[in-house]
Image 1 (cartoon, rainbow, N blue to C red):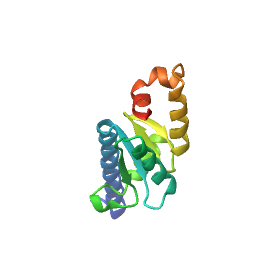
Image 2 (image 1 turned 135 degrees about the vertical axis):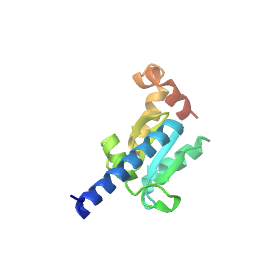
Image 3 (image 1 turned 45 degrees about the vertical axis):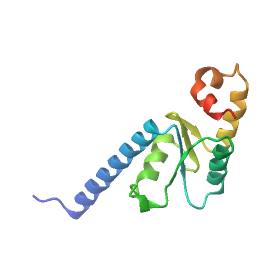
Image 4 (image 1 turned 90 degrees about the vertical axis):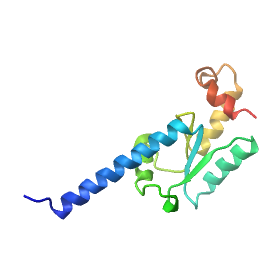
Length: 130
């Protein structure tokens, strides 16, 4: 018995999702700073501008622009992996930070040398210090 069109589309969607999840894992593992964004997100721009202001490189991935060959399922993979459906969705050194508000809260926590964040994630705090 042959596969139906529905079975094939489900199989194709699963393959695309698996590919997107693999891409997400690779990016998070290989990029010290990563912003998942959209081209119409002002908070994403603010996050990118913040990293520029402290002279840090941060890769910005526009989820609504697949011209660079990324999977259209990447946004779904990011949302499922982080349980955050909004952008910006920021990772530092493989750790999920969250959105712009959480980024700014992390900056403030890192200034407190005895905070849990500063003590447990020196790599993140070192990156966020000006």
